[in-house]
Image 1 (cartoon, rainbow, N blue to C red):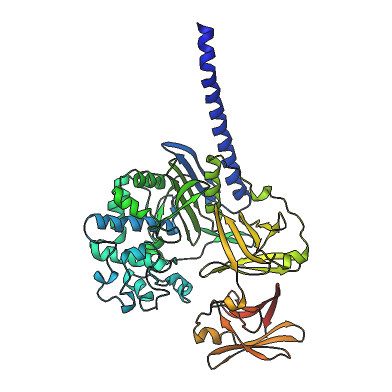
Image 2 (cartoon, rainbow, N blue to C red; image 1 turned 135 degrees about the horizontal axis):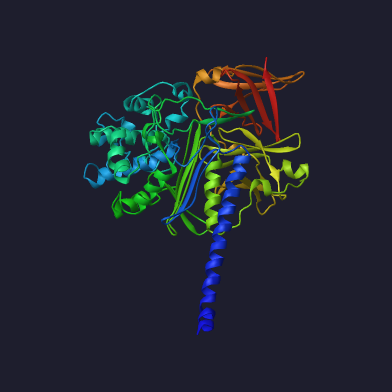
Length: 543
């Protein structure tokens, strides 16, 4: 009897042991993933991974305060940045449930003095980034105003008279203005401050006692300090008054409180089933209400990241297997999103290759030069590929320039962040596309021809700041002039041609496939330009 019983139970015991070994292997691999970013000086912060009611990983990495060498820990409080948006969206949907508003209502219903351009802008447009209202964080004066305390009314005044970038509902473009406007409307409709409404209707009911609206002056226990990468290591992050991000990015929290939020939101403790469905149903570009919703390797993912001075964050939920991944970083950079996607992949049993595990190969210069050009991945977001002294470089819109390294003749990787770029040819053998692989997403970019570049308007004061002569080599200079509102360039012994803006700092010529980019020094003064032509980047110093 005993021998027969042991034969019957043995398969179950073996399965149990195998399951434990698999789980242990996953935890080891997850720690390897995080540690690779810590060792690379790309991440400090706290990480939590939970599946169902079981916490799989829960640790702090690096320092909450570098000067005092205070370690990051699970109870450290981090600025969330744009993770705030999902709380704002949920608050608006709560007001809808209570009959205070409809997400189909036009903004002007609650803001009688709304500009005429907002006639058709609805609350739902604001929630889904489809209003066409330009983001105030993209305005030229934004950086100069970050340190100045403000009010919701003054924030709205910054962008209320700006022309729409497109008709409401026609397109998608991320807009912090939309979520600031939602907070402004929430206060008008509810009669409470944004801070009080979130605290009383979301944080307190869910037991999120370590969460709140961040303040530059209040004493906040266990607050992590924010840092940015510097040439010789981390430096203290720049200052931003926390009245500026408001309902678009001013909240703070911990990994455990964000787990309580995910459990409450998706457990039916915050919204009705109908409201939750509205919040998690994408409208355009995989964006729902304060959340991105997409499928990654067969798994539905509901996610949002955040970025603010000194902090980058990511909060991801996979509803099919009730998997929550929280990565809160107090060192600026893209590591939190990369870590979150890789940790989820580890739980799902997928193969993961870390940057340190990739092997570099040599690719002929002729092949490298064929990739040079600008690739548009989304409206207003492109990646410029250049060949500089035999090294292929990439530079995304409003980001630094980084080298990329070949792991195959068509596939390249970055070492500063876990991302890969793959070049694609058409039927004629011409390179016409690239694919950016990052954070579990594959973003296709179409190569732009000069005729396809989109011209934008830049204020005359900005244009005039570029006027001057720039020396690119002994005996070769480019003179920049402003003539009747048109920026012009004239190279040594060459005709004069007009320049057309595709960003406030980057211009293109129509007579030849070349672009000129203006560079500022630490004081904000234009002191150089870079000529991008024929896969080369030639720097010119202002004389």
